[in-house]
Length: 259
Image 1 (tube, rainbow, N blue to C red):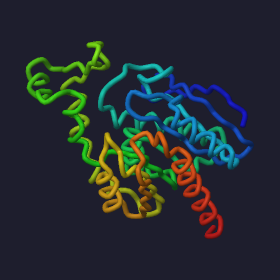
Image 2 (cartoon, one colour; image 1 turned 90 degrees about the horizontal axis):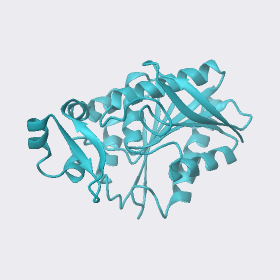
Image 3 (cartoon, rainbow, N blue to C red; image 1 turned 30 degrees about the vertical axis):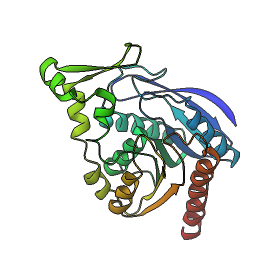
Image 4 (cartoon, rainbow, N blue to C red; image 1 turned 135 degrees about the vertical axis):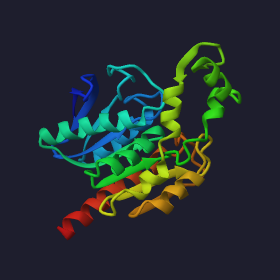
């Protein structure tokens, strides 16, 4: 596939930097990374290789405030990232691509759920290890007293073991996360949208139970649990790639036969 660095401007005027892998096919899949990650995450690169090998074009990009893209890094920000994704999908359509699927890992999984509930204009959506219960998982990153500190200071800094500040969580960004309702979003996804959730049974960051919640609430949903896989599918990359490629390819075949 030909690789081309591509810049898309989001609705805030920030430049989003991506890489377009053009296989000669107008069918394209958009890949989106997780929290504190980038378009060059090894999981994203493995999926890119697997899809382009099947002749499907791929676009992977950095969300605003991440990687090479402009903007401030912010905790939360789910809605803005869904808007960023919409700017990318609109750009690709203008360039005469047929956006077949959007795929998101981890926080990216939540953003594609949100995207499907707001925009509903992509026929296949793939959520890899997204979190259903957004009120959970915060204490593990910010410590038990995070709410007290935020209420007192207006923010809390997430730090590495070395003491280096990784990112700042403001009251506003925390509230945005807590007010993002995955249950309501899941229930409002159109049954025309084919939805696929993949999760590792040994996910150490987001429990596999969350995947069953998505399966329960999204109308047209297929669930694939990879036995023994962790959050980043470290030892299960091939199984992950195969599952995603199979879902997209078989759904595509289904589309053309029903057309």
